[in-house]
Image (tube, rainbow, N blue to C red; front, side, top):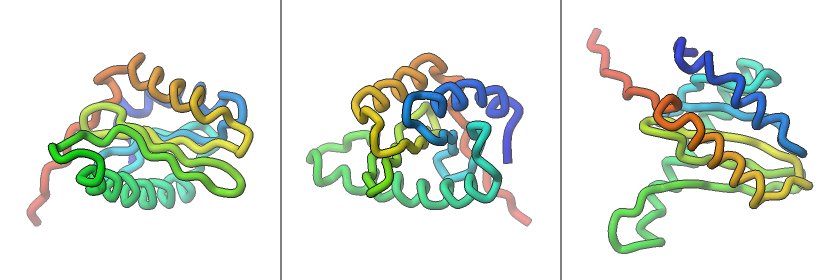
Length: 135
């Protein structure tokens, strides 16, 4: 599912996926819907990653209580695997950016590149919350 505004964001996701050792990038709504993806991400992969990432960011938000006594906003989650990394980063009101990279990626530089992409687009990356449909 893509919105017209999100479809226009594929250029920055493709740019991020072209970073050395990066693989894929997706923009997801806070409730886990794919709103845009880099060019090599097919619908099935995007949907699987969206479902997984939704759970990861939700768990990460709940774990904030371990970091601070007061409410602290979630900013980033990184998971390491034998063959690479998965990054989730807050990307604006109601959205987050997910990217994957191989084991040789410079984790700090890539995280900074993701944050820079978010800053460049600012609120354009935000996704309005869905309204409940009664039916």
